[in-house]
Image (tube, rainbow, N blue to C red; front, side, top):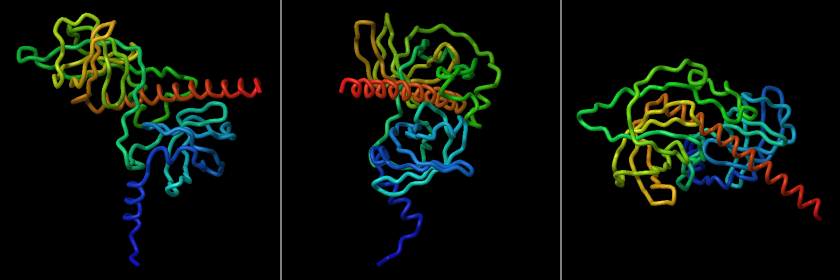
Length: 272
């Protein structure tokens, strides 16, 4: 009987794990000298939700050690608390902590955003992409502005000037770390699949993000022409800003849906 190294075992474990295997798993949460046990209830993107009776013992920004007892094994990881509500905490789910058997799509969140497009040409060289303002958290009661050390620069630095340019107005409907869906209400010339366009996005009216988009699909709707696009050539600083924004929105959606479910459960018990 051969003995495999720890590295080989870890590799095999990663290949076996599916996201649903971690849901409803007993999860030990440790910080400093305090240890308690909860149940993991939600895994999507970079967010892990844990039902925890002793949630009041934890604060936003706390560094925690997690031990997840799943049907496919025991998994340990270091994380940070980014959300907290009655009976629950939300932590960052490190993107490289596991390798899942199926492809994981980036979580897509609904947004209220505007922007504009232009197709770059040889006579109009692309400008350096800069950031103007900060992404303000839309769920201030659920998420701290100072959670991620690597994002402090984004959350507290002063804005920088950028050049203005004319373009086709768009309405952004949803966004993920990998792409966006947007609507052009009065398209003059339809964009083609595979076509690249330069975009300026203003998420929640706060921060300007410059990027290149590659069109992957389109369809006519009653409000205009809808496009799905993939992000290309986005600067690292802008990627981090987008990641921070999506994490905040995920936390808000997670707790909004959780409260609705708890209310329904309570109503059902009352009826019975």
